[in-house]
Length: 103
Length: 123
Image 1 (cartoon, chains in turn cyan, yellow):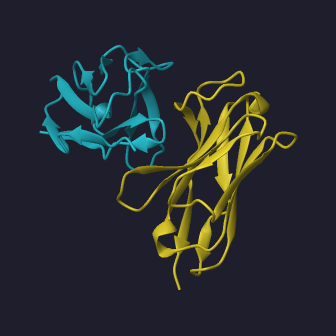
Image 2 (tube, each protein chain N blue to C red):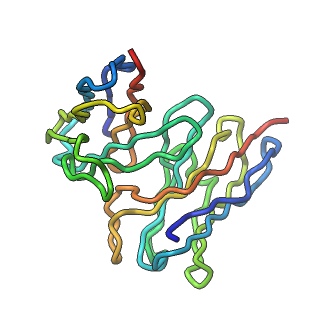
């Protein structure tokens, strides 16, 4: 069973700054990785799939990279609406999440 | 309007059963694989089950295998989750989610989610 880990658990960022979130798989998952954003009281929203392809309607400030076991989600300039929890996912396994909060 | 709407949650005693429904609208439901994903209070996301567009294949998380059954009625545009022998650890918000594969494939990306329905297992 593949285990997904995410770091850091919490990331404190000021609005306008860049945020870099990491996701690691315990074995290679090729590019079969997605990222989701979840705000309190809301359902998750698909941001990135195939490790680097933005989902429909996702702003260009969100980008994904990586393959194999190491993946990164970058938010180039944080907006107020981006403060949320971010999950990576590979097939049936989700990572534990990274909470991005206001510094 | 493209949407998924879950229903059927509530408070249930340990060992009892509950059936969740997910009504789909605004897209060709019969062309898409569908999933259930749950989230315990204050916790992360846990995938629960998947069903192929035609119901031909179904897979489950080990934590629910043998107790939960996923099914669908394409004539009613509805997804179901039959939950038997419920345990306290099944307490969660249950989301239905559409597989992004579409057109008869399952890609394991979830591109449309409902708002969820809360299941509380407690005596």
